[in-house]
Image (cartoon, rainbow, N blue to C red; front, side, top):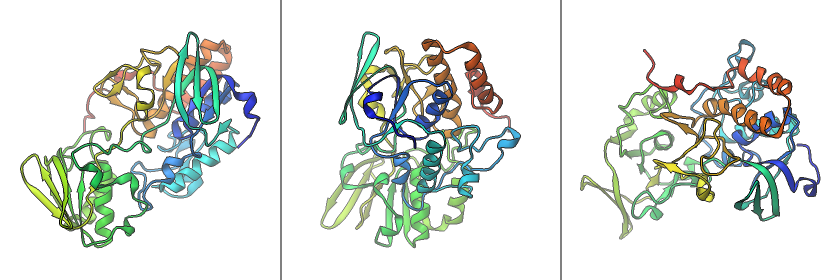
Length: 377
């Protein structure tokens, strides 16, 4: 990636926090607008994906359909395709991180790594970002830090006795013949399927009923890819729906799990906590208003509480539309970039020229009414 002096980028128009798919995706458009900005990343490009379990794969398929105006579902820009770059349909985390690194190098994005944000303060018309590398100042901030590096470990009493999904490097490392998985959504069943493949008998405790819940929006129900995988190992999974875990205890070399149904499950091995992830917004929650744990945003994905603070990534939600997959939240990149470009005075001609490509390739979702309701069949 293109490097420039850090001192030259201490003050700029826009600072993007996070070098994952959202941060890079918005950064590409700002680059096309020739804007003065920098991306701050506390580790490395795509670092969250590098921490995925070795066996975990994308549930959304990658396919090279760009030439027919149907871009790869996991692409972060209209011109690129993980399927083409990686030659695989369901990339691993490490593979997708390679794609992100290639994209950042191709577009020569201004990224500063190993910069951890400690605090963001709004002072009149500018932001001051306090980091381990000193202060940065900007007129606009785009928060794209994501979720994976912020696991939700306090979903029930005794959760510290469990292994969180995000702490697993490879399911092959987990010993024993049986395992209990707490949580029945994507990470829960990903754990269960992989454990069965390694010869384990798995008990899944699902606080909801995800195996039977069918919704046309995969943000709210299991993906077809996951359902196919479950069918392939069905005999190895003991599934308990509507079984919420109340407490986990460890006594005499045994883990005891108590549920709200007053039913207990025991194992000699650590339960796996797959109850999800907390939001990175916990670091800047005072700059947003929230409703039902989601930040309130304007039609331009700007904080309703803090002017010129924008959000991009899986925490974006408008009404019932949850933009938690790449193919969803990428459609809002251009909305954020366009708003900032207009505010800094980029010419209408340049804005329209850049956005034409994004609109033509379904990377620009302005009318959110289309996200309401179910598919007909």
